[in-house]
Image: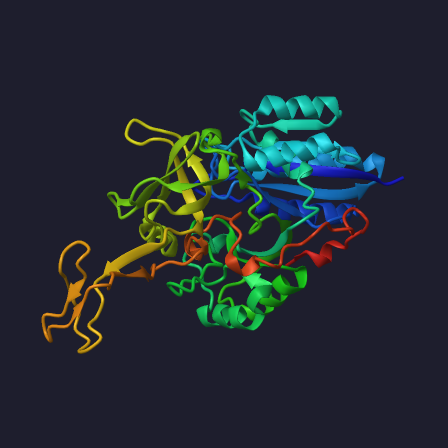
Length: 448
């Protein structure tokens, strides 16, 4: 009788190199040789991007397989050895963890995953759930990656989700400039349009599918379906060999991290929030070109910041005025010796802009010249032709604002993995009824 086994792991990389998705790709290859089956795509789950101990994208991985009971020990040994071998264990802050979970994922573990994406959780919470449901956990050094491992298992991605095709470099090319034909990326972006996203920054023309660090990733193509990202891979031209590739199901581009706060009083450090309020004062520019503005409600005030690299979002923040009603989406930076608690804006929605009015003297009905007031209640006089208008009043007109009500998002080159781009609005997925009801051949999501 085949049994379900969920394999979650996290925190194998460091700021200097490595990649947990690459570890997943290696494990997939080895599991396929054991003859196990996969009942879903590999999961790449982005966790809360604001926690201070993350490396780069704060991604945790989960592989969901079917195997014979007698294979369990061999599978666990294979996974453990691969994680230990491929992790950047010599680097400070790399704290790998693995979780093995048999059977169906309970609601409590799903809820834990949601908290790990939207707030801050502890390893103690994770270990308590692991013990309760008789799962197994293995940690290296402090084993902090156990948190992400359990969260990746709990994140079922039943609703909105996307896919990413990741191609990996051969070892001798890592650390060198990536050799991708930029014109082919532009062609892919034009040809597939909204089927894929965040491949090119329209503001700068910068290619976004290639990372810049020494990690093993050559490029990553994000899209709505498996078919779309595979097609993107077929269009992109690489001038260097690809060692292997994997397609991941992911929560990237879904805003899964953002949680609405009822009031400014609920804004907590490191938590991603959506907060509504009234702009309390004119925005100000601080050193570095960053724009800071304050919003308020009945419970208090909170600073919000649109940083210089956010491009369009910074420009929008600069055009806000006191009294505008806005919603700010972003992660909360804790207060420091020099700055208060601040929401680092990823998006700004202008809900109700202040109406600016200007009062102007009327024009002369005879010659068209702007008239002059003769004093309070005495009307207006035309200095050019002498016409008097005793009953005339100032004309009130609205000044057009340089920004309109609507949602504004940070430029693609500075968007976080979880930030939902404007191109995805209207494409959100509902519950995936196929979840856990299919057996997938690994060739659908993995290859050389």
